[in-house]
Amino acid sequence: MLTIENPRTFDWAGISLADCCEGNAFDVHFTLKLFDMLEEKLEELGMRDMFEKVISRSLPIFAQIEYDGLDVDTDALSLLGDQLRLKNIEQEDSLYSCPGVLSTDNMSSNHHLIEILYTREGALELYPPDKTTKGSPSVSAPTLKLLLEHINKELSTRDV
Image 1 (cartoon, rainbow, N blue to C red):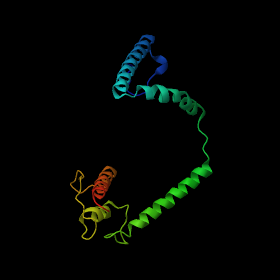
Image 2 (image 1 turned 180 degrees about the horizontal axis):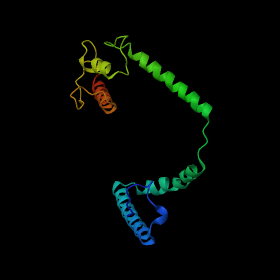
Image 3 (image 1 turned 120 degrees about the horizontal axis):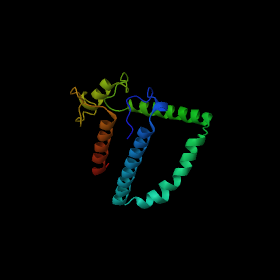
Image 4 (image 1 turned 180 degrees about the vertical axis):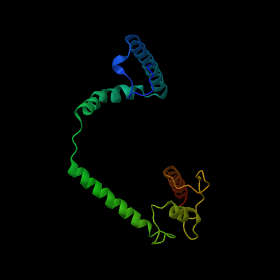
C-alpha cells in the first residue's frame, strides 16, 4: 500500500515506477480481500440477493448522478425548508403546554432540558439513563431517543 505522510506536499510526479507499482499492487490486494470479506458477510446475513438485484443494479445510476450532478429546484427546497422550520416551531411551542415546563424555559438549553426531564419538581422527574463525563444527566440525542423508547414501551403496557 502506498503510504505517504502528506498528500498535499508529496511529489507525485517524482515517485518511482517501482514504488507506484508496489502501492497499486497492495491496493488491489487489499481491495480484493475487502471484497471477499463483504461478499461473505452478505451471504451470512442472507442479503446477497438484495445486493445483486437492487444495490448493484442501482450503482450505474448513482455513478451517473455523481458524474452529471443533480438538478435541485432551489425554490422547492426553500419552500420545504420554510415548512420544516414552521413545523419545528409549532412542535417546540406545543412543549410549553406540558406540565412542569415554564414559559421562560429554552428548549435549546441543556440546563433547562435537564431540569424539565430529570430534576424539576412537578415536571417529568425521569431517571436519567445516561450521564455525561462530568456526571450530569445527559440530554444528548441518543439519550433522548432512549428515553422516548422507554416512555413508549411503558405507555404501550398501560391501557391508555
